[in-house]
Amino acid sequence: MHPVPRPPSSPYYSKPARDERDYEEIYYHFDDYAQDIILANADKFLDPPEPAENFVWEDRILDEASEGEFQGIKRSLYFGLGCGLASFALMRRFLRGGTAPSTGFFERYASRSSTGSTGGYRFDPIPQRQQLRPPLPSSSGKGAFIFDLLVSTFVAGGVSVLAVESDMFYPTIVINKSGPQGAETTVISPPPPPQWISSEIPLVPGRSIVAETLCQPLTDEFRKFPKNLWKTDRTNTTNGYDGHVALYANSGWRGSKYYDQNSNATVENLGDGSGADELNGRGLYEHLVLEDLQGFIINCERRARAERKIRKIRGLRESSSVPVVIANEGVECNDDMELDDIYYIGRDDDGSGGLGL
Image 1 (cartoon, rainbow, N blue to C red):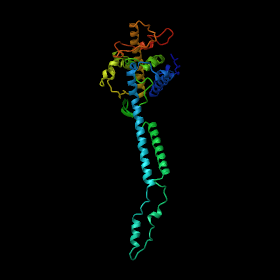
Image 2: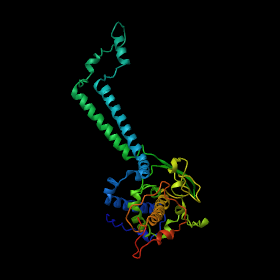
Image 3: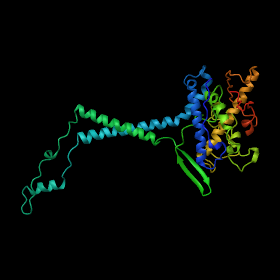
C-alpha cells in the first residue's frame, strides 16, 4: 500500500468560512490534496486490478464526467480547422490569384474624352491595367503552395489553442442565485470535475478505485474542519437535519440516475426542492463544498458500512485489506446518520480514521 501524502495546512481548521472566496479556497484545498493522493497511487489507476467488470459503473461515471471537456476540446479543434481552411482559401484567391483594383469611373471617362469628343479638358490615356499590376509569386508554384499551407496550419493551431484556453466552446451552466437585491442569473463555465469526480462514486456497485484511494484520507482531512462549517443552512433545523442537508441528500444508488438505466431518477435533495441550477443564495464553490464534497464524504461512510457488513458475513476482520465487491443493487442508505458518525464513530484510539477501506 502506498503511503498517504501529508495534506497541506489550512487556516480554516479554526477560521470560519464567510464568503465565496473562503469556500473556493477550501474546495481547492481538498482538490489539490486529492490530486496528490492520486499521483502517489498512479499505478492503481493506470493498471486497475482484474476483473474489469467490477469497475463498469465507476468507468461510466468517469467517462460522463469527462464528456463536457472532451466536447469543448473537439469543438475548439473544429473551429480552428475551419479558420485554417478559410485562411488558406483567402490566401490562394486574393494573394496568389488577385487582380489590381479597377479604376472604374475615371477610366471610362478618360476613354470617352480621348476618342472623338470635342471641347473641354482631355484626360491623358490611362495605361493598360496589366502595366499597373505588381509582379506576384506564381499561384501554381510549389513553394507558394507550401508557404500558404504552413501559414494556414499555424492559424488553425493558434485559433484552436486560444479557443481551448478561453473555454469558448466548453459547456456552460446557468445559476439562478437569489440574494438580498433580488434574483440574479449568471452563465458561467463550470470548473473541471473535482478529483473525487462525483459524490455518487462511493455508491457504485462492484468496486471503486476512486473511493478506495480517496475516502479514508479525505475523511480524515474532513474531520479537521469544524462541524459548523458543513452546514448548508445555519438557520434551518427542521426535520432534525440541523442544516446538514448533504448528509441526508440521497437515497443511495437506487436514487441515482444510473440505477436500472432509469434516466428519470435523480438524487433526492431532502428539504431543498430546487433544481440543479438553484443555489438558494449560495455561490458555486459554497455549493460544491457543502453538497458535493460533503456528499462524497458521507457516501464514503455509507460504503464503509456496507463493506463492513459483507466482511462480517464472510467471517473477515473489519480491518482486512481484502477488496469487497458491492452487489448490483449498489450501496443502500437505509440507516440514519449524524455528523458525529463522520467525526467520531469508527475512529481508532490514536485518533486516525477507521472507515475500514
